[in-house]
Length: 277
Image 1 (tube, rainbow, N blue to C red):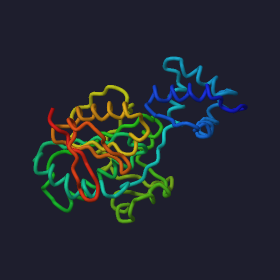
Image 2: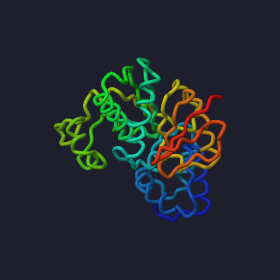
Image 3: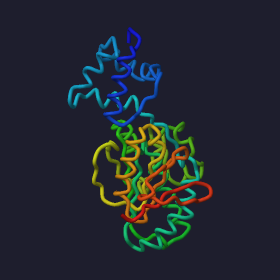
Image 4: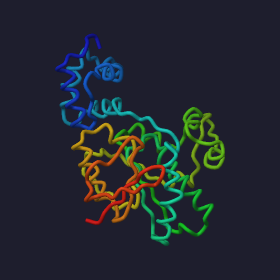
């Protein structure tokens, strides 16, 4: 980029990004846009952000996905924040095992990035089954979604470099659930990998994926406006079975929507139970 971003260009890009994927950029984030889009602008011969924005207005232009991917934060790690997985193991899985019997258990991991969250959920379920054999008898399916095609490709491969493995994964779990790959990385074992199905999904889209007993939607709603957040949470309620649970990120809360969700204190942590409509 040969020139600075003008206020008009920045406002136009903010509008594009919010319309395309819901991300609400704050004021004075021009430096973030410039740093994340610099390579895209150079590789496609744009001297200004305005030129790129003009091309992004074309329906189904391939650069739209590239730009959204560049602006999406894909920060993640294994067993992130710890307490949601403690709640899963100590409260939710025993409760669901009692309720479901031999019926299948379905879990949705929204905004799953490179796969650490859904694979962590799968490991937690495997550990629960090992400690309490016969309690969770039904099939378990985890549907993991993200807007970014590139991170989903990483997730589907299930192979991670040592630096990524070390972020939140204990040596014991590494030994139990991964094998060394010829490339020098670590490959997740088939028993865990096969529990997870990855799908490309924009949370702004209308989607039909069936009903879920649990929905993990963590550390993504903070990027949306209040109206979009409410819309997404309302549609997630429709995706939950009555009495199913929604798990949000540590810095997120569900303000409003009392007709849809009941707050459940877990000490530490809060989850939300879907009310019957």
